[in-house]
Image 1 (cartoon, rainbow, N blue to C red):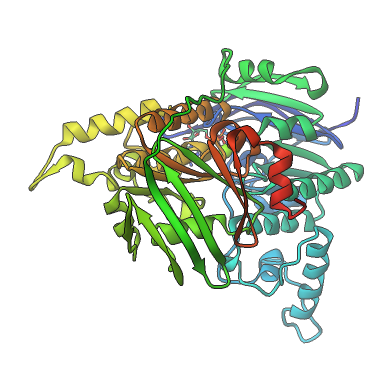
Image 2 (image 1 turned 60 degrees about the vertical axis):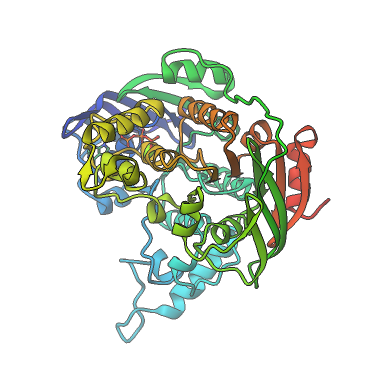
Length: 496
Ligand SMILES: Nc1ncnc2c1ncn2[C@@H]1O[C@H](COP(=O)(O)OP(=O)(O)OP(=O)(O)O)[C@@H](O)[C@H]1O
Ligand SMILES: [Mg+2]
C-alpha cells in the first residue's frame, strides 16, 4: 500500500437550503490517479473546492501526509502542493496566455519590474511540453474553450504540484487532446504526484484511474479498484439503480428537406459547406477541435456573418442577419460555451427558462403565471434538474445542472430545427440517457437536429448521418450504416 497523500474524514458542507456534503470520506494515495464519480449535483466540485481552499468545511478533518491541517485559501492549498483545474475556466480573458500562467507570482527583473521576457520564454517551454503551438502572447479571450482549458492545465502543472485535481478537464477536448492529457498525467504519476480526476466520461475513468470513489447526494458510497469493477456496477453505485439503453433512437423515414446549405463560405474560417437536413433526422458534425464545426453553425444561426453561399429553409432561400431572424424561423442553437452565450448566471432557473419562451405565456399585457410555472416545472422534472426550487440562482447550481437549464431553455422554444453544440458535455450518465430520449422524441415529432459532438459513441449511436469537418471543410459524409470511430477519425485527421 502506497503512503496516503490526503485524507478527508467526516466532511460536511451546507449552503442555503442545500446539504452539499454529509459525512464525506476520501483517501488519496501517493502517485495514484483517483477518479471521483457521482451524478450532477452529487457534491464533487464542492468537495474539491474544500481541498483547494475555496470553501471551508462546516465540519470534518483534512489530513495531508498524515498531519491534520486547515486550508484557509487557495494560496495555502498551493503551499501544500495542491492545485485545482476547475470545471469553470477561471483565466482572465483580457490578458495574454503567459500573463495568466504567471498571474500573482510574476518573476521580477533586476530593475524591480515584472520580467516579461522570462515569463514569455518559460511559458513557451511549458506550452511546447504539452505540444501546444499557440502563441503565448495571445489574449485568452481569443482562444476557444478547449484551448483555454489546455492553458489552465499548463498553468496548474507549472506550480510545484503534489496533488493535482482535475474537475472535468476533458469536457471540451477532443480525442487527440485527451490523449495528450493522459500522457501528461502518466508523467506526473511517475513523479509520484497524486491526481484526483473528475469526469462523467466512463471510458476515460477506465483508461486513466487506479481507483474510483463514488459519491451520491453528498454522501460517500464506496471506493473500488478500477481493474476490478465495470461500468454497470459504477452506474448502480452512482444512481442507486441499474440503467440500460443509454442510447435511444427510432430512425424516421422522411423526404422533407428542412434545411439546405449550399457553398456556404466564411473567408478564412470555413469554405464550400454543402449539406441537407430532413425533418426527423439527426445530422452529426464531427471533427477535431478548431475544425470549424461550431463556426459553421454560428453562421447559420446568424451569430457570425458569412461571405458567400445560400441557405434554404423549408425550400426558400433565407437571409439570416442575426439570431432573432433564425429564432423567428424556428431555429434554435444550444451553444458550446454555455457560460458566455447561454445563461444569465445571477438570475433564477425560472427567469432563464422563461427568457426564450416569453411569447408563450404573455397575452397582451397579461402574464399567465400559472402556465409559466407549469412549463418551467415540466422541464425541471423532465431533465431532472437538481434544485430545491425554480427560484434558485443558476450560478449556484452544479455545472451539469446549469447545462441542463440551457438545453431546457431552447427546447422550450418549440423549434423546427435545433442545433446542439456538445449537448451532453458535463452531464452525468443518467441525465445523458434522458437527453437522448428527449432528442429522439423530438425527431419522432418531425423536428430536425444537428448535433456537434466530440464524443464519438454519442455521434455513432444517435445520428442518421455524420459530416466530418477538418480545416473548415466537410471531408466526407458517413451514413448510419457506415459509421465507426475509425472512419470518423480517418476523415477528421486527413488520413482517409
Ligand atoms: N455556492 C453555492 N451556493 C449554493 N449552493 C451550491 C453552491 N455550490 C454548490 N451548491 C449546491 O451543492 C450541491 C453540490 O454541487 P456540486 O457543484 O458540488 O455538484 P457536482 O457533483 O460537482 O455536480 P456536476 O457533475 O454537475 O458538476 C448542488 O445541489 C449545488 O446546487
Ligand atoms: Mg461539478
